[in-house]
Amino acid sequence: MSALRVGVLAYPGCFASEVFGVPDLLTMATHTAGPDHAGYEVSIVSPRRRVAASGGAALDVSPLREFDVLVVPGFEFAPGLDVDAKLAALAPEVAVIRSHATAGNAVVSICVGAFLLAEAGLLNRRRATTAWLHADELAQRCPNADIRPERLVVTDTGVTTTAAFSAMYDFALELIREHNGAGVARTTARVALINDARSSQAPYVDARLLPQPGNEFSRRVMRWLDQNLAAPYDLATLSDAFNVSTRTMLRRFADETGQSPLDYLQSSRVRRARHLLETTDRTVAGITTTVGYRDPGTFAALFAKHTGQRPRDYRSSFQRSAN
Image (cartoon, rainbow, N blue to C red):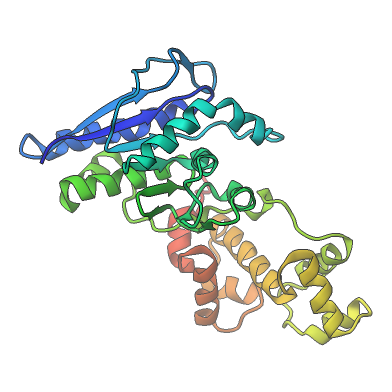
């Protein structure tokens, strides 16, 4: 097997760590695999002569050529960023991405690099992911794509997209697994202290950072549900509290938020349970009762549906030390 040709597309404002993260892990995999395994021929390339990454770090770049895999890093997605202007300024890079894909070669985006792939038309009618914080905006910009915000890595007919930052290592391990085998990928992960058993970004989602849907009516309902988190859910009682019929409650809440009051309540209970699992030593059974469930098994299934992990596994991954 010959060396796999990997190009990383550097561009103004890209994250330098995402430029070098994949090449560095591939270098480690080459050392781990030994001389009997095919390695990687990696280059940092650009259609520009000079590139400054986010923070002003100058990058040495090589001219464009053909690669088996083209990796597109993400960029600084600051609050208030004019994404249209950002993508317009990166028209040369978008053209490179489109040309590379048209030639039948694989394209990979890291984090919000998916926005460049969308601009190149590569996400139309494809499954994709990106950083959970920006998944809704990507879905709005690319309505013909099937955005999977819970996934770490999604590959669909030659186009791969990943979640935020550290998901570049999940992609790199998949590439190593395909090119050098599962054993080399596993050993590389151990050497680099990388978790090679992750399957979802759902456990990392912090709903407080997401745009809050709804207007005054639905927000008042949300506050009421949060204040009565442990009480049994009863649609009639909720509706009476706001002097509306059950039908009106469901319609108005859905119109403003896109979900039912019960959906919101379940999400709120999971958020509260996550906080308690992270910050206290209370038993899972006790937390289950606190957030309004009597059967730990039922709640564990709901928790896993929202986070991708059972409560005990979540605590093992995210509990903060009191010291």
